[in-house]
Image (cartoon, rainbow, N blue to C red):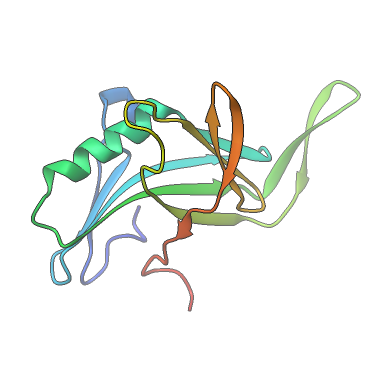
Length: 147
């Protein structure tokens, strides 16, 4: 979260799903930008965001009507070590650390928020009771990312 705070940005960790809130809110008051961020990290090939956590993000965005630019961002961080099983034993192999910041828009039917999955390659999927559907959410360029 320290990377989010800068000269023009203020970010606060809200406590996440344990308190019924998104992980982070960040604002740039000079440019009237609000980011509501749900963050996931792990050593597997896929990371998942449950539907209730996505719904919470959108409910927070609705509270801040005066911001001109409001985004729900799902942040996915795939750690440098990949969890694997060798002969039924848990082990790890090295890989490149990758991060994705996806702008999520409610492209599904009202009242039926799906779970969202992101793979190590950055592909995203809506997970519903009928299966999974690949969907290309736009990437958000964070101000701290290299040009």
